Amino acid sequence: MHNTLRIENVWDYPRPPVWQPVGLPVRVMFDDTTIATTDEALRVLETSHPPVYYLPPNAFLPGTLQPATGSSFCEWKGSAQYWNICHLSARAERAAWSYPNPNVSFAELRDYVAIYAGVMQACFVGDEQVTPQPGGFYGGWVTSNLRGPFKGIPGSQGW
Image 1 (cartoon, rainbow, N blue to C red):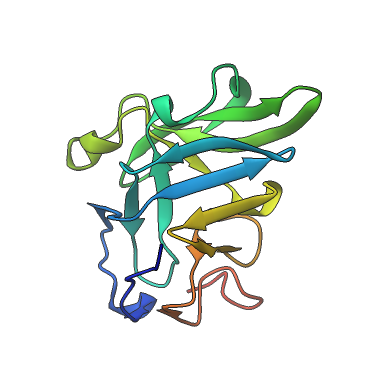
Image 2 (image 1 turned 90 degrees about the vertical axis):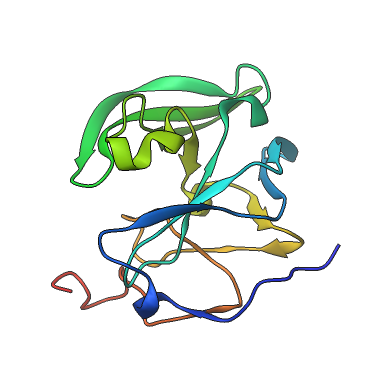
C-alpha cells in the first residue's frame, strides 16, 4: 500500500474548520494489538492544526472504548465526551473523544471517535505512522505531507 497524500500547508486550512473523508485506511495500535481499523475515517481541517482523524465506533475492537469522566466544549463541534482506551490490562485514560450531539455543520462526526496519537503505540494513515501534534493538548496527527508550523509548539498558545 502506498500513501497518495498531497502536500498540504496547515495555514491553508479553513477557519471555521471543515470535515472531509480521509480516503485512506486508518489504523490504531495499542498494547501490541490493532484496536481500530477503518476505510471510513473522517478528518477535521482547521487553520494551523494538523488534521484530527475520527473513526467510526464500529472500527474499534469490542470493549476497547470505555466511558471516561469529564467533557469539553468546542465552539465549532459542540460538547465532547471522553473515552478511556482499554485492552486486556492496558489502559489509556481520556485517550479519545467523540461528539454524541455535534453542531449541525459537523453532524457527520456524530459518535465518531478521535484518538490522541501520543498515548497509543502507533497510529497510521495509509502505510505511514503519524506523529502526534506537538504540545499534548490538541489531537492532530502529523503526516509527512504536512507543512507548518503547527499549533501546539512552544509559543503558539496565543495564535
